[in-house]
Image (cartoon, rainbow, N blue to C red; front, top):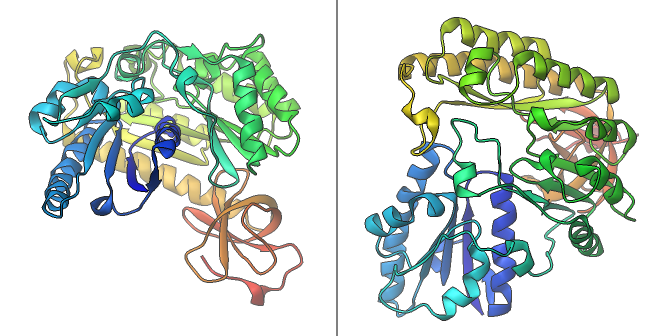
Amino acid sequence: MKTLHIKTFGCQMNVYDSARMADLLAPLGYRPVNDPARADMVILNTCHIREKAADKVFSDLGRLRLDKQAAAAEGRRMVLVVAGCVAQAEGAEILRRAPYVDLVVGPQGYTRLPDLLARLGPPAGQRVATEFPVEPKFDLLPAPSADGPSAFLSVQEGCDRFCAFCVVPYTRGAEYSRPAAEVLADARALVRQGVREITLVGQNVNAYHGAPGGLGRLLRDLAGLDRLDRLRYTTSHPADMDDDLVAAHRDVPALMPFLHLPVQSGADRVLKAMNRRHTADDYRRTVDRLRAARPDIALSSDFIVGFPGETEAEFAATMDLVAEIGFAQAYSFKYSPRPGTPAAELPDRVPDAVAGDRLTRLQDRLNADQEAFNRACVGRVMPVLLDRPGRHPGQLVGRGPYMQAVHAPSRTARLGDLVDLEIVAAHPNSLSGLPVGATADTRVCA
């Protein structure tokens, strides 16, 4: 047996891709290990959406160089692979700065890993696979394997939206939707392995067009599978929330009442400069439609502050939108110029100190809203899918309908169980629950 360590940066699609790389390498005898220093192969599956994410890759490569040298001193060869969107965008730069890297493979090229490894030889750093293959990469992947009761399932890749700040169209390519029959076959395979919750993933997942009726129809078809209890999808674009998809939130009980719907800004001029193709009021109307269809739905979002030219009044419009909508969770960042994107050429850069101050104020509000949402869950009974051990003995952790981690005692439950828990305590990023009817002395604190 050979050993494999994969470190994943960024989005859920990268999490999915890392799992598929492990599936591709398993027939070659690779088994996962947690310690990269002891691995025969290390893969960094990278994200290029922000500058800091790319910087972390080169920082990790510096440490891995020492691990690779130590392995060579022991008579072992460590194969070092950089995959993902940084590999796609900066393959030549990776090899220039880190010539000890053996393989550079983009998001569409990792399906060739077995072949590339078979042909790998000295000198290192001479294998680069960053072309976009003609055949869809999904045709080259084995059947998916499950590692627990929840799984990601890719249904769509690439993006045609071309937001001014985003590198995804350049690193992932044009939108491609998998045929519904393939998605259903993969879902059945996952369910046979014990998966009870599937999250459909894509760069712009609600632009899915692999079946008549789009994502709404696909969700209805998946909900008909026996023993598949829960469905989610991410990440969405507000302009692609069509009526059929909104209706699915009303009609499909398995579809969880939680949606990540990025808005980025509450100011229309900024949204136009970002090429988001929606206004703040468009976003409000979409939220109203969703809440009319599913009154208990909770929302998450993404925000960028300090976009070129953003004024204090425009930032205030974002704060007003946050206060009006009320988000259960959110991700917020200072604008990070990415080479090759239109926004990187815009004038009127917001000073870093100003952007940092705005980010602090926004995050303070978002964190307060998240904590308030969590506190409002206390006293409710929620179905929780237990998917991992807790930090403390006798504790399991799962996900509730709204994506919070929920800690519970394991006395009467097992991993993979979907149990009703009474929420007894709220924390900034999690909840504590007890089996319905349990006494307080059985509680295990988070």
